Length: 289
Image 1 (cartoon, one colour):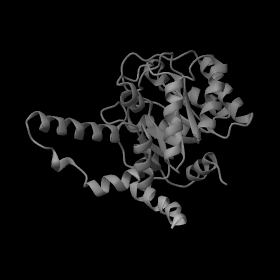
Image 2 (cartoon, helix red, strand yellow):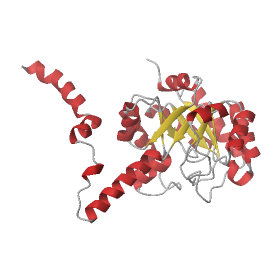
Image 3 (cartoon, helix red, strand yellow):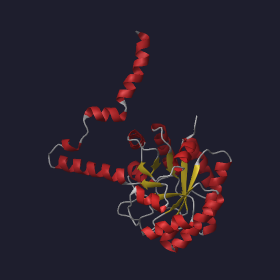
């Protein structure tokens, strides 16, 4: 059986820029797969918001993220990239994070160079560790993969914010030299900067499309021309869901029923999986008749 990591490698070798809507729980991951997308990403921002109702500022723990990841990976057949944040400690913690994410079923894990506690890449107050510590995190992640963890390493740098684009590019190049599989330079601020990243740091690149963030929102064709292999949309689905919930709550508050926002009950049951359950159940009930 082909592993999720191998499936993801094959997808990222294609001459295109894949669209990757991001998930936060089993249902969102399942819906992304059912809609025909090839892979997804467990967004730390979205998991923190949905699981503990708090911002992505390092408040959610490794155990909570790992538990959420197990449920997500179990709910969908497509490869899932996991947000491993800073690795939750020193280099040995990074190594354990990578090993445990692989056991949970992730196809890839993202490790970043922010100071712990980390922050969302498009919010204020983020800082990065020095270059040597950043390299040690990726070195430990690669060591875990080389020791047998079947998982791709997505190396992220947030150095653009406080140290400039060239430092971010230099870190990305060093990550590749250490054996990182995927590069993610967070928050370039112009199309020209985005092009410079992929030109000067060759490799598989992820673009991060945060609506309202620092990076221009471009089409998949435009991103492909710039050298990006896939584009993450970490908050789009969460934002859409939250807007629908807010509108429904507003209707309730005004003594109205928000029926125009709802799926038909049959469609709701289908998405969740009731029909598949009934079909599977029939295999066993037929045995008794």
